[in-house]
Length: 358
Image (cartoon, rainbow, N blue to C red; front, top):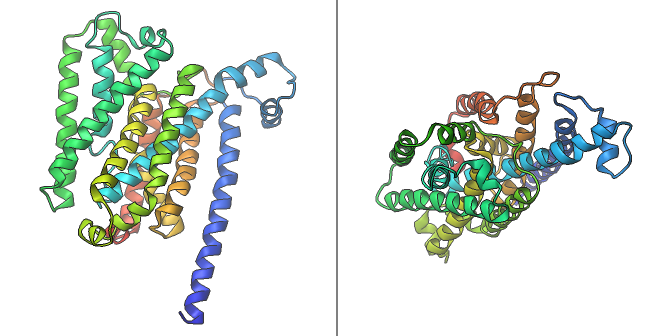
């Protein structure tokens, strides 16, 4: 390698380190800002004091931060990391820049699992009643949503084995998601009005209902999903070269697919179960991260995707609070309004998205 190539590589290395440092600072800033903003504005200094265990000028601020806004901000971090990494894994596994948990029907599969619990198990199985079951209710939602995600992803993987066109595969994913939503619609049609209202509220998406042991369960499951994703980062790099070449390199493709299947199902299933279906994060954030770092190395992409996903979700949640008012927008609406233009901008500005997967 000549000197000029070495200098260019060193320059990119410094730029990536600087970019990651900036992202860490932004993540901390928006975490504090998300806690400070809301119907009751709290100064950033007071938020910092409370988070470091110091007394606050007002007891009400202490209660709001510790009991309401801190769990919500932590949930936003978990959602941003989980959905972003799920989208990154899907785009690499299918070598498709438009793949994501929502686009391939995986989120719809998780919704089917939640609908099976809320709509298919009797008139008293509202989300509120399920949450009153405590930890067992939380695990019931997580298990059913993860199973729904895994079933849809497994079906798409089986079909993918017979297809070579990524666009056709994407259409198949959309169709599988449509079938899944149709099954849910049948359940909705025969459900009681109070069940239907509860389910519709869940579909809007919310970060505010995850507290106490629900947050503990969600944190544990997302952590396991992220560890599985990190452990398969080298295999994901090899998969970028194509499955045939990956096999020639000694990669066990079946085992790698199983790891990605487990990771994506746990991440998407648990987050959808507790927070509702949240779109565009999974597809938008991996592209933003690649644009920032100009790399396809998953050992760098996965942690940086977590940072970018965290920042995006914290910004969306801050906007959803409509600071200074008593109203709160559903988080799914805000992520879609911000995510869709970002995806369009990336597609327009980068004429050859496929170059990231070759």
